[in-house]
Structure formats: C-alpha cells, structure tokens
Length: 112
Length: 110
Image (cartoon, rainbow over all chains, first blue to last red; front, side):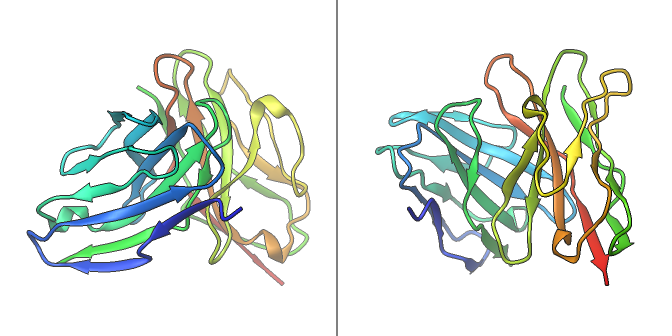
C-alpha cells in the first residue's frame, strides 16, 4: 500500500498561472480532504469529499476547485494563482469521518 | 467556533527529562481530541486520541474538561521524540472536521 500520494512535491508558479495538485489513495477510503498549512499556522481545511461525485467546501475554499470522479483521486485545482496561496498543501483520506485520517507527504507551492 | 491553542512554538529539553506539550481547546460541547506528530521528512500521523486512553511511545494525554486542556506528557524524553506535534479537535456536529493547533516543535538534546 502506497497510502496517500501527492504530486508534485514542489512547485513554483507565477501570479495568474493555474495548476492542479494531484492526490491519490489506495486504501479504498470514502473521505478525502485537502488542507493548507501556512508558515507558523495550523492546517486549515480547503475542501473535502465524502465519496465519488460529492465534494464540499471547508474553511478556506476561495481560489480553489476540486473534483472527485473516482474513489482514489481527489485533485485540487488552483486557478489564477496568487501570492496568498503560497503554502504547503496536504491531502488526507479516511474510511469514514470519525476514523483516523492518513496524510500525504505534502506539496510545497510558491507563487511569485 | 472551535479553536485549538498550542502556546509554545518550541520546547527544548534534555534526554531523560519530562515533557509536557500544552494544548487548550475552546468549545462548550464535547469535542474529540487528538495529537498528531510529524517526524523529520515523514508525513503527519496520528499519535493518540483521547477516547482510546492509551499510551503510545510512552506519551499520554488526559482530557481535562474543567480546564479545557489536552496536554501531551512523557516522563522521560528520548532523542527520537524530536518532532512537530499538533493538537487537533473534532466536534461531532454536522461535518466532523478536524481543527488543528499551530504546532509545537519538540527538540530533545542528548
């Protein structure tokens, strides 16, 4: 089991560019999550999904979009990147809402 | 709204010393509390949760509802305990999202 994998590990974007952060899990988990972690701060929930075809906003969804076409994949799309989106992005998954969340290794994104 | 506070950014101790990482939460209901750990170059992982009432790697944490605290303790720190520790809470109303504290870096010196 690879668990939760994320690509890329690092990325530098120019202001206004777009990109997709990939997240895949091979544990057949129903729930998937995207968090961002700004320097010196805790993780904040961007979007989550309770199953294929179902997504919902978290605390800080502005500037992002997600989709969940399969159980395994939960990509996060950044449109019109802004410096405020410079952060480390973590994907996580869990079998159900009250089960342990398993985290990916993170993607460090810089927008300049 | 839920809030989790970890007042210390850095806690530095010597090997063999006791460790207490502080965590306070603000919620009037009955949240579920967790400690997550991130060792160097590893991913964030669950260390323990209060409902389990277990000791993991020598760490324990007791939920004190009167003080709204969930401090993480270990009687004798080891060098391999050096890591970032995050306290988190989850409220069982609506979507059960996790709310994280800002984290405490524990540095155990030989």
